[in-house]
Image (cartoon, rainbow, N blue to C red; front, side, top):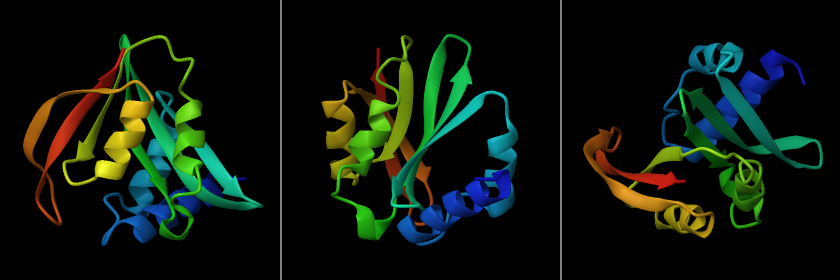
Length: 135
């Protein structure tokens, strides 16, 4: 898959999952070119149905996004994507919408614990973020 195809697939998933994609296609393209980012993909046959994006920071990792197409949710793709980071031996952080109980449950099953909240972190709609970490 070319970089252009990767960016388009990620953007299509974001556009499907969110009312409005939190990233533009140009932002996705730029993120894919960063040396500090890694992307993992979930496939259904030949179609990309989910992705996980990581950013490597000094001594820690941040999950910047994980998403699975709405029509494919509940089929284990989130668990498959989380398995990609099982062997990372440093703290991993993420933020998740306070209302997204399904995602929080997935993260907790994968060793993440709640650290705190960020008020009004998300927009469209405005919502708090739950900060989670896996050591």
